[in-house]
Amino acid sequence: MVAGLVLSLAGEDASNSLQTTSPQRKIRVLDDILAIPKDTLSLLLMGDTQYHYKCEPANINCKKASRKCRESYGLDYHLRSGPVLNETVRIGQKGCIKIENRYANRVQRQALDRLIERMRYPPSALIIDGDLTDFGHVEQCKEFQTGWMTSFSVPILVGLGNHDYENNVNDCAFNFCAHTMLTWFTNYGKNMSLRLDYRRWVKSAFDVTYDGSFAYSTRICSVTGRNCAQIIQLNNAVDYETRFSSLFVDWKVNSAMDFLKRELKLLKDMNIPILINMHQCEGTRLDKMRELIAEWIYETRALGHRKRIAVFFAHLHSMHEVKTMCLHGVTVPFVYIGSVPNNRFTMLQISRNESSLIGFAARDAFDVGEEDSLHVLGEINGIWAYCNSTGSTFYPFNDNLSKRDIETTEN
Image 1 (cartoon, rainbow, N blue to C red):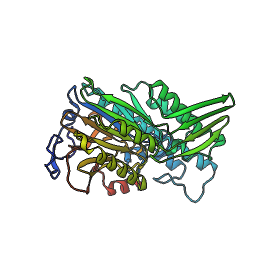
Image 2: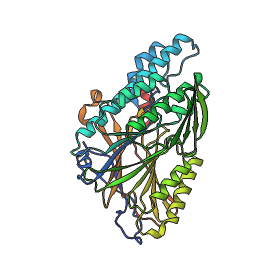
Image 3: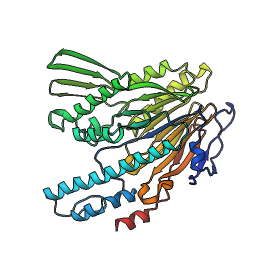
Image 4: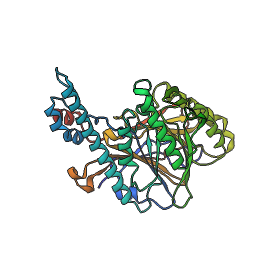
C-alpha cells in the first residue's frame, strides 16, 4: 500500500550551524516504513480507548456501525435525541454509544495487531496516554482490560486521563469510580515493575492514605539495546491535583511538576531521547511545558550532547498533528498522538542518526480488506533537527476525508 506524503526535515546528525530546510515531499510504501533495522527503537502511541464514548464524526465507518441503533431510537448522526428524551431513549443512546466505542476499539486493536505482525522487529511498547475509560466505572475498567491488556504482543505503558479520575471526583457514589481507576493503576504499576510516584500509609484497616503524583519513568530499548529512550508518564496533566476519600481510603493526587523536574535533572547528563507523556497539554499547560523544557535545555547547554526531548498527548479526539518548537536551538516536538474514537495512532522510530514520526489511520478490514486496514497519513523525519529560530512549525496528519463526505454520511 502507498503511504501518504512524507515531510523530511534536516537530518539530525547535522552540525550546529546548519539551518533546517523546508519540508520535502516523497512517497514510501508501508512495508518500507515497517522494515526497520534491529537497532532501531520503535514505539506505538495513542490515547482515549475511553470505554464507552462515541466516535468522532469523521470516523464514518464507525458511524455506519451505529446507524440502525440510532434510527431505532430517533438519534441523529451525533447521537443527539429529538424533542422527546425519555428513559427508553436514554438507554438506547447508551447502547448506541457502546456500539460505536466497541467498533472503534476493535478496529484499532486489529490494525495494531496486523502492523506488529508485519514487522520483523516489533515495537518495544504501546503507550496509551489516558482516558482508558469514560467515567471509571468498574465495568468500563474491566472492558478496557479485556480489550487491550489481554494477549497483546508488546508491553503496554498506560497513563490515566481526566475521564478516569478527574471528571468523576465527587460525581460518583462514594468516589468509587476514581478509587477504582487509581487502585487498578497502582496494581498495574506493581505488575509492570514500574515505580509510581506515591507513598502509602496504613494506620489501620479502616484508615489508608495514598499520596503522590502517580507519575513514573522507565527506560525502553530496541531489540539490540543500541537505541533507548526514557519514557516519562505524567498521567492526566502536569499540574493536575486533587484529593478525595472513598470508603476507608484517602487519595491525595499531587501535581507531577516536581516529579518531572527531578527526572529531567537526573537525565541531564544522559544522551538519550526523553519522551514526556500526559493526557492533556493545551493552553496554559502547553505554556508550562514549553517554559520548563526551554529552561532545562538552557541550563544544560554546556554539557555537550544534543538534546532530544518530545511531548506526547491525546485528549482532543479529532487532533492528530505535530507542532515543533525551536527552544534554544533545539527542535522540540509536541505531538497529538491520535485517539481511538477517530481510529488514529502514531509510530515513533528512533535510530542513531535519524528519528521519525508516522501517523496512521486504522480501517476495518471487513470494510476495506486487510491490505488497506493500515493507512499511512504521513511521516515527519528529522524530528530533533537543529534550529536557529524562535518560531514553531505545524504538521497535520490529514486523511483524504472531506467535509462533504461527512455531510453525505450524515444525510
